[in-house]
Length: 436
Ligand SMILES: [Zn+2]
Image (tube, rainbow, N blue to C red; front, side, top):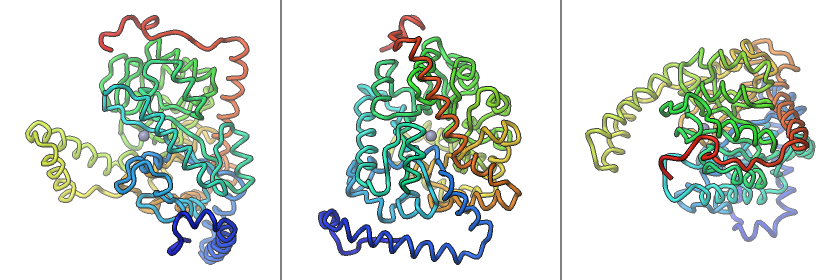
């Protein structure tokens, strides 16, 4: 990995030419190191991922930058040319052969304050400043063709995906404005049930999508914004599949038949992807891919709830939670388990309906073997050892997502000919709000 131990950041800008020479040198050294790995499956995986873009469906780096302890929201200070505290930086992404990345534009839905727009806009700003800061390595991608163009140029196509429909604050105008800022997918919910959709990890209030929720899906179809069903309840998954005229995605979920976690996708939904055309981008979140890690997650949640009922002081409660976690370490998930989920989705939904969505930088624990953004080729090497063909591996890597994206764009072009932007309100479709 390459770092600049002596140069200050002001100097870096003046060192552009030297930087590109040094980058080339680093690239040569990395390539030499790769050639010596001695693992034919790994070499095969790397070669394959250089011929087709690996598209990762979910990475939370923009929130990490916001949340930095030393320099919050400072894109320059959070230098991704160097090793970062979590799982993502440019050298590790290059080592991991990442061709395109959906950067998550996440905002927490738990805090009900004066509105979400400010934080959401700030997250767009952080992500877009980050992408603009490394023009030699990252490029803002707004279309499926952009992904292929950037990949050919050797840059990571950088897409923006909103995490949580609460961000639109029940407004289709806000949805359209976020599309204009570059959002190309939106998870209909995050972890909190909304006025128009139930979340996987919250109470069921509507049994799926309300009429306004269906209108959100229709407007996303008209815009060409991918409907992301990670984080929603099975009822919302089902309703969205009924309503959506374009293929849907799950940007970071796993298979519920293997790990019974509410964030995962049931087989009854997986089989419906054949007709819809959508994909599940299998995530690396330990509690979603390992039954032992999932059981631990449940226990940790119960302990946290128990403490909430008995300890009122927040700091003291956090300390006790940390103490519990130290005494009960989370069981590790493994790369092989992630590969099992990939194969389950392939077996039930079909090879055209599976992709990869790591959730790096959104997780503290990582599976053994998939520790950071440098490790993607190891997952592909495992599948090569399991007998996967090159054409199937290419579909998994990114061809499936590209097909879905092209299809969503074609649907949008068709719908825009016959349908005006929706001006419907939640009050018109679902009746008066009780609050707000
Ligand atoms: Zn998430």
